Image (cartoon, rainbow, N blue to C red; front, side):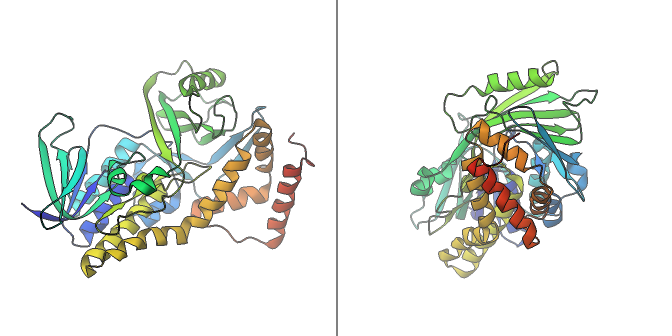
Length: 397
């Protein structure tokens, strides 16, 4: 039986990026992925992603130049993106392009469902999978030196290999409907504007969204709350925005992690990446850029572990990710845990977003994927406005 250097389970942005990086580095890589499923996702990507990962602009199905923040009382703030734009991708097309790029650079694509792994008599990993998408399909086995689980928030690889870390994961449930975009623009819908709606009627602890994707639009919501009827919330949102007459193309739901796991590897030969590692940003729910960054770091760590024979190299992926992005995640987590909890706080949050200093710092950080060092006076103004809203000294109106 052939022994692969690495088997990657899951062909989303993180898994496909990891497979591509490893194949380009000369490793023998198998990319195991099921076909036909598209993850529910707003599809927003910053311009930095195109630069960092050599992604062609032609994959952008829409370019957003404005973000509208909407409060529970329907007050809104339109925030210009500034220089550049926020790209929108169709996840079906985008993910497939990433998988094909990995294949063209030497990775072998295998269609199937991961079931579990065992070990050969010498301790080498044996990855058991279906040969095809059906759970009743014949079983196959891949023998590999290293395994990467990029199989989503409910990662079967993580549950088996890193059960302690997985049990502590934090997840929000997301649901969206892909609809035909309106043919006529209005105040409720603009093809170059992404709407983020902070309203307890549509989400009790996260946000709802309307993200244009050219000919189609994603209308969705997310929540931690069990029992909240997201389908009904989206039906109400579409009706309130005049989007209820637009044809519904498909409906999708999935869990989304909002906190990096404490462990990304089993100290030996199994690693996780992307949603399986919990790298979706709190508050914003942004995941594509961070998934691909995580996939790259995981690939480099796995490659180092193979080359040196030292499994401790696997730890480099999590360390590097948190070194570069951990501070952003911590800030966003605090923001979500406070501002998203009541409609009064959501109202105040949207008012804070009217501030030009907040707008500039927010979008510079988003576009460049780094916290921005601004003039001290700008930070001071933001600080005192936050204190005013936290103490109730400033009105949310």
